[in-house]
Length: 458
Image 1 (cartoon, rainbow, N blue to C red):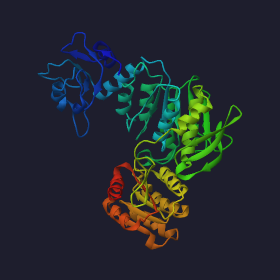
Image 2: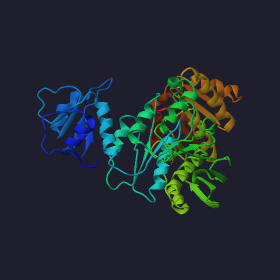
Image 3: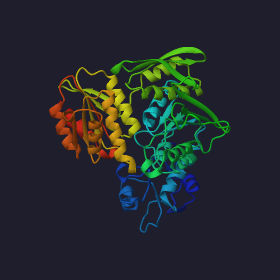
Image 4: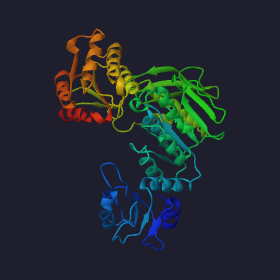
């Protein structure tokens, strides 16, 4: 973080300074007293199950130079700023800090694939620019401001991920960031439990363009049925996909299993060949968004190629491992929804296993009333895709089993369990050398237990 004077922080938060610290400057920020460095600002957030105000003494003892609090602190000798709401204060400070930087900002959202897309865009842009990007799951109203506070004078561009669970969240983030480019990977049914319909999900995603004008650009998946007809007179729209009606489209696609996917794109009427070192057609879409963004920032085809070729996904996303037993394990356990489940199944099948293709699927959460139906459909999709054995874990494992059997698959190739631990034990007895095992489920299912279990046993 670039150094902030205490006067700037008071101005940004509209707070009241108590115990003034003359000439105080802050070069770091933390919302966790355990990670405080000497000279940091500690922001005491109050959540449903915790209250950062309870840890102010601990933060001060570890060297916090400034406290942001939303209630008076009796007996506190450390300088602190009293604000109405510490969450809002964090966002206001981040927005103030962001406005010091006259660099382009790219924001990415979508029902699935947004993290990989964000990372791929950052990988490509880093071939020419010094890039700040969202790390981990810092894509919400807390994580985004913390990411922005990581901006330094040497950064030339920022690529940020925007997640959401309810309407208004992406608008809030966009108000803080005021991005120049907004990317929507797709509109599916993730979070439909809270938003009620795909139309409402679309409205929530489109909030990424809330503050756009003629100087801004929307980059969207033109093959997605909810986005294909998007048009605006207020800002520029660039569409990517496989359909030739898109502004940027891929053709001559060649899937090469673990060696990734080759494809071609015409840039300025000149054919350019690209390669993504990951399986799955969905990664062609991710790559196309990166190409579209890179072209907005005057990047040449060769630099884009290098950025795509050198890209590696974040942890828990399509992580392919060869176990000592000869089993190939594909860990894609970061999260799951119907769209990403299908993409992962397609990627598994493209790997061309020497033995059986085995899917271990956990519950897809936040689907509400359509949960049973969607798990049933995923099982049928797996069966039609050529999966040999399906192992289900969670509350909707019976729905997966019903879908599998309804597709005509035998009862000896489906195993349904209520817990992840039971499923892990089942795999150990089924998988053989040469088999490929995909493990996927929603974050709340903690499917990494199965990955760790199999890795430990080799």
